[in-house]
Amino acid sequence: MLWLNRIRMQHFPANFVRKAHFFSPSDDGLDADGFEQSLSDLSLFQVSGPASGDSPNAAAGIGTESAGEENSPSETPTAVALQEETYWSLSRTPLTSLVFTLPLVLAYEGGVLLLGRSHPRNGADVWLRQLLDGVGLGAYFLLPVLTVLGLLAWHHIEHDRWRYSSAVLLGMAGECLLWAVALVGLAQLQENLWSLQTGAAWEGILARLIGFCGAGLYEEVLFRLLLLPLVVWVLQRLGFSMFSAGLCALLSTSLLFSAAHYVGPDGDTLQLYSFFFRTMAGIFFAALFLLRGFGIAAGTHAAYDLVIGIV
Image (tube, rainbow, N blue to C red; front, top):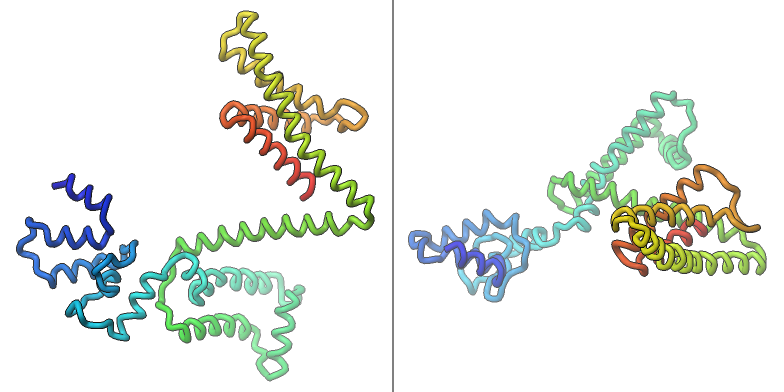
């Protein structure tokens, strides 16, 4: 009855499907105790909340003696823990924080030992060690040991389980990297804005912002919306195939796009690396125009100019 199981999986909650499966006519020999044990075995894979009519304990994989019996106090925290074990909760636990920061502790303390204890140390490290020295606790490894013990004590107070997830640790590393990139961008933006001292300077940056928006819009209008189809049309009239005409048009308009940045009194100084980069950028914007449309190409161009110009 594979087709029936598919319908059950598509149209009914997961715990209801399990109940229907365990009490199907083909499983006459399985009693209610077997059903409860099976739910307990599957509790770690539970992804949906309790269905209508199921007790919270059954949804969490905890056996119940009767439908009318209330949850015992010892069972409720377990059910809640199973439901709340997400990345956002697990990444905040003291044990996970300890495992995640332990490489930093080892790298810092090991690096200081490798370079010699006379090597300049972090300011906060020096202040904490001076505080410990003031109360007669000047052992060298005492500070990192107290750091580890403090996190373990916090873990004990929270009554968390002694486990961590490698996937959560990897996610934390990625999240830290994203926040660091955002902070670097914010710091650079602050530096640029902090240097603006006069109203004229603010008018200058406003003019640049407006110019970036115009470049993203009208450069795409000229080189992608107008020139690219025009060159394809001309080359096809000269006997080129559609593929050859499109390829030649993409390359030629991208070269023109790059060269336009060095024309006129406000043009940049011609340099090989910048000319090559702008040619590649022209090919990129042309590909966006062909595959995603004018709006995406113009929006991406403007966003790029704004980010590079401000940050």
